[in-house]
Length: 261
Image (cartoon, rainbow, N blue to C red; front, side):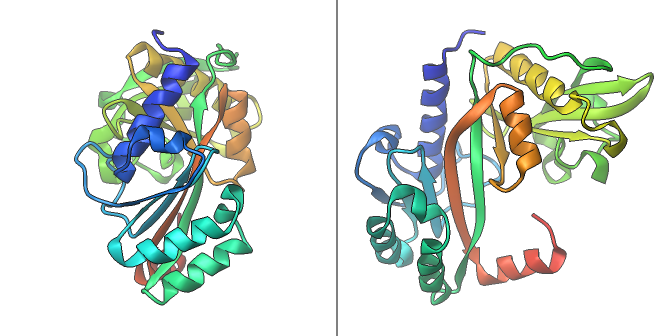
């Protein structure tokens, strides 16, 4: 596959540095780092840059990528609490209270996973699996496959692995080319076919297919999405970094009205 676990982590940190506007080595420091966010064409395509407030941690410290107006507030916040507490309540209320005075609110909280090559292996699937490409996705932009594929960014959906019950697609892991070096995996399985190991078999195979193409697969889940986190672990992925994102109050309100994430 041409990678080591160390190289995979290094590539992820380099991409996070591009996204945040910092240096990759900043994530390895013992002290926290605050940088002013800026747009970068190499950033992950689904990010809206520059950030007002984006907290990132690979476990050592917090790197805050912020706007000028948020810099003082966020720097004080990340200096006041342990790293892990900056990403959870009750401390997070302190950040949110300060952000609300600027018309912002805490919006997204996510955990990101990278493959552990010692754990990534072929997993048995009770159904036939096939590698799929963008040409196969045309009719699949429907709610059933909304985690595996993204209708808003169809051009980024480059590769997938499907599971078939005879000719019926019953599971799909897809990946989007969110940046040059890293492709993000999402997976869906029809409800009546769940709890049979389909999702993990598809995720693990797609991860290997991505690595064979010289890219690093990554996987994202909300910390409370136990089913998704279990799939990541079973598939050979391990927690690598976390992010917290603030958005405008209007943006948060619209998401709550739609009931979506």
